Image 1: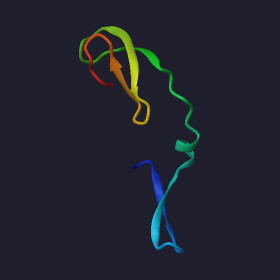
Image 2 (image 1 turned 90 degrees about the horizontal axis):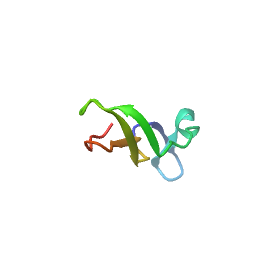
Image 3 (image 1 turned 60 degrees about the horizontal axis):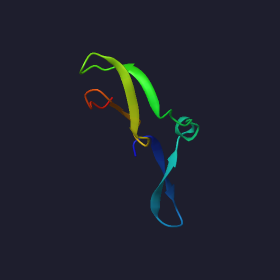
Length: 65
Protein backbone atom coordinates (compact mmCIF):
# COMPACT_ATOMS: atom_id res chain seq x y z
CA UNK A 1 0.00 0.00 0.00
CA UNK A 2 2.74 2.47 0.89
CA UNK A 3 0.46 5.16 2.35
CA UNK A 4 -0.14 3.75 5.79
CA UNK A 5 1.67 2.03 8.60
CA UNK A 6 1.46 -1.51 9.94
CA UNK A 7 0.56 -2.22 13.54
CA UNK A 8 1.39 -5.54 15.13
CA UNK A 9 -1.69 -7.46 16.17
CA UNK A 10 -0.52 -9.44 19.21
CA UNK A 11 -3.55 -11.73 19.31
CA UNK A 12 -3.17 -12.98 15.75
CA UNK A 13 0.62 -12.59 15.52
CA UNK A 14 0.64 -10.56 12.31
CA UNK A 15 0.90 -6.97 11.14
CA UNK A 16 -2.33 -5.16 10.32
CA UNK A 17 -2.11 -2.12 7.99
CA UNK A 18 -3.86 1.06 9.07
CA UNK A 19 -4.36 4.27 7.11
CA UNK A 20 -2.78 7.52 8.12
CA UNK A 21 -5.05 10.47 8.84
CA UNK A 22 -4.30 12.19 5.52
CA UNK A 23 -5.35 9.15 3.48
CA UNK A 24 -8.43 8.45 5.57
CA UNK A 25 -9.65 12.05 5.08
CA UNK A 26 -9.12 12.17 1.31
CA UNK A 27 -12.08 13.55 -0.61
CA UNK A 28 -13.54 12.09 -3.77
CA UNK A 29 -11.64 12.96 -6.94
CA UNK A 30 -13.45 14.74 -9.82
CA UNK A 31 -14.03 12.46 -12.85
CA UNK A 32 -12.66 15.08 -15.29
CA UNK A 33 -9.90 17.69 -15.14
CA UNK A 34 -8.58 20.21 -17.64
CA UNK A 35 -4.78 20.15 -17.70
CA UNK A 36 -1.76 20.79 -19.89
CA UNK A 37 -0.52 17.43 -21.20
CA UNK A 38 3.24 17.03 -20.92
CA UNK A 39 3.32 14.54 -23.80
CA UNK A 40 1.23 16.22 -26.52
CA UNK A 41 1.50 19.82 -25.28
CA UNK A 42 -2.23 20.60 -25.49
CA UNK A 43 -4.51 21.95 -22.80
CA UNK A 44 -7.07 19.16 -22.81
CA UNK A 45 -9.46 17.10 -20.72
CA UNK A 46 -8.13 14.29 -18.54
CA UNK A 47 -10.50 11.49 -17.49
CA UNK A 48 -10.09 9.66 -14.18
CA UNK A 49 -9.17 6.08 -15.11
CA UNK A 50 -7.91 4.68 -11.78
CA UNK A 51 -9.37 6.36 -8.67
CA UNK A 52 -7.31 4.20 -6.30
CA UNK A 53 -4.03 5.47 -7.75
CA UNK A 54 -5.22 8.93 -8.89
CA UNK A 55 -4.38 8.25 -12.56
CA UNK A 56 -5.93 10.51 -15.20
CA UNK A 57 -5.87 9.80 -18.96
CA UNK A 58 -5.38 12.50 -21.64
CA UNK A 59 -8.23 12.29 -24.18
CA UNK A 60 -6.00 13.57 -27.04
CA UNK A 61 -2.99 11.25 -26.81
CA UNK A 62 -3.81 8.65 -24.13
CA UNK A 63 -0.92 9.64 -21.85
CA UNK A 64 -1.43 8.96 -18.13
CA UNK A 65 -0.78 11.70 -15.58
